[in-house]
Image (cartoon, rainbow, N blue to C red; front, side, top):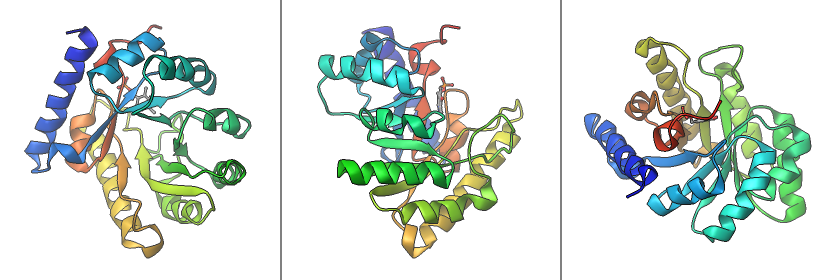
Length: 233
Ligand SMILES: *Cc1c(COP(=O)(O)O)cnc(C)c1O
């Protein structure tokens, strides 16, 4: 077994344990492999280990890596874009990804919608929320998230899957947990509205905080270093 395969198996167990603690079933939580900075060969290893969702952060890296990965591992997985997205990179990203998790403004959603219509495709999206309020983080403010999500869901060519966040950068688990719990409340409110009732997903939790995210209701965790080891600096 390769290191990556062993880490994938450990990660699945970790997610299953985090689910068990709160009485959830492990099948409720998907694992996205965050592949930024990793070469195509390592990305293929994680697919071989069982990953079925990949997440990229940079448009240029996505365009360089994804075609090579497809060649080595043709199909059977989803590619998501999870990084900051400039509107002038929308077309490049949509050549390689089916889902954009980092929709944080209506202008970007409008560009994605226009591109989806032009391509005669449905583009899946998550609305990214800055639940921690940290100024360095992307994402719409929690109090504006539901309005943005409603507007995004109404755009042609887009399918809103749910909400996404990056956990608070704090050594205090209480602070991190509070952010995830706020996301869970927002998600429940979103699903309670008829126009967005199908947008049930909640993408939150990374290598350092996924247990707290799963406890708060995450349906997808996004994991890089716990699978691939530390990123090259
Ligand atoms: C890198 C990244 C992750 C994974 O982070 P790790 O700490 O390496 O697990 C998750 N989400 C986003 C948006 C990222 O950029």
